[in-house]
Length: 101
Image (cartoon, rainbow, N blue to C red; front, side, top):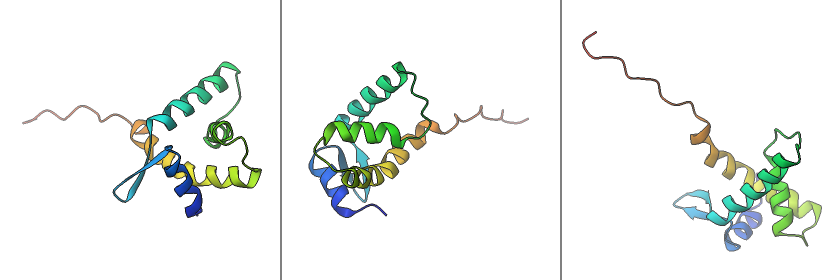
């Protein structure tokens, strides 16, 4: 389970925001993660794990953080990012069945 301190830090630094009982990513987070993902794509990095771009983005935002601190931040951010991506990863609904058939 993510450390509350890591979540509080990400919220205080404007990377995550609270939306009722849910955590959401901010535009700052989305832009930073997009830059990292594009860089990984350009370098043909063989990644399939969301933790790699998260760790790279967080290391850029927190260059003074220890490995343990970065791991805690990644652990805190991963479920938030997965929840944000879930609607985009869902298949599109199929066509509605015709009425009266």
